[in-house]
Length: 288
Image (cartoon, rainbow, N blue to C red; front, side, top):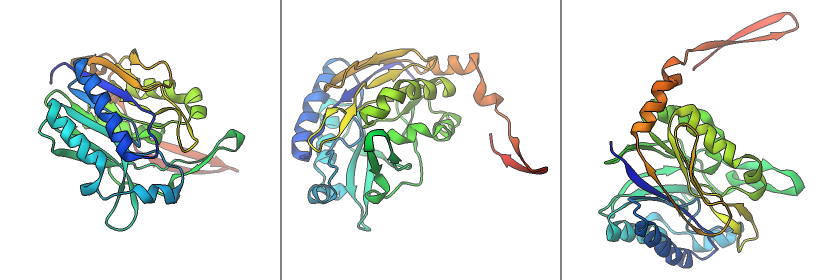
């Protein structure tokens, strides 16, 4: 493991994947110009399209997707690891995946991750989302060894499920990720604390590129792409909702140091949960 420079690209993806792919090329060039060798993009890099028919009209299988093709070319052109936070992909079974990709410096796909937790919520002021009506959830999270670190994958709403990141940390991930398209409402309330909490409780770097601003489909996302250190310091943040690139230097040794200071991963113990109800007790065994 060795130190490296990471970049988080903040985008304002529209409904046209071709235009978003062209924007992506410019942002990646900017990140590489700032010295990044690992570059991450937000959730739904290819298109933010709330209308299901509109999304289906631009949906492609992985082999035909313009973001997949463009990302492969960009990774090879710049000799970087390029992490597409996610894009919508047509599956062979007719369903849609919210899928992340990691491309190596040769342009090949190193791994994929399909978002596990679906954003099915009813927020204040009538804002409601039902991702499960459009997307098929994934079943497995992923960690992968890169030349400079072990990296864990998640997407957006996954950040509210700490057990996913704990599993990655226990598997040795020194860098965890949650590229996102957080709503403005939930972002203002929870974005910063969730990013820092996942980093602190796992002694890991947290890198989360985000969508930001008012999009063509009418939604508003929070932005504030962040890179957080294992001790909870914010190393880099886009302190706004506008498109751009933030970078930070990542030293995986600092993850090991944080875990040595507070070895909560090692100190975790299985425990029972006792439910008392009207004089009756039930004990459930809960994994640590």
